[in-house]
Length: 143
Image (tube, rainbow, N blue to C red; front, side, top):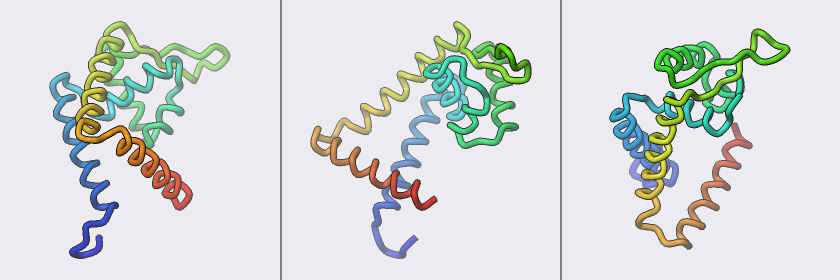
């Protein structure tokens, strides 16, 4: 961090902290943490996905993902089905309870989006999105 300066990277970091805090507060009402919510949301949008793909999406180790999935399975939110032709690999699906929970999670993220965009004009939204895409691309190239 550069002393005494208000740099964009600091502002992005601050927004990230605020976003995380908002999400955690809302998710605590349905007794989930962010990683569980993102897992359920990913399985919702990628039914039949496998653990390796989920781990890559979340940026977590397989052992961590295994524990997350065990807890979600214990809560009857997900089910694992053996992949045809590969008994070691299991596909992930939401149960009916998981689908209901996914709807609540989706609403939390939609509400967050509304809060973020509420004070921005369409032009500002487009400029922000384009700028963030460029920053993301550049950071990916340098990581």
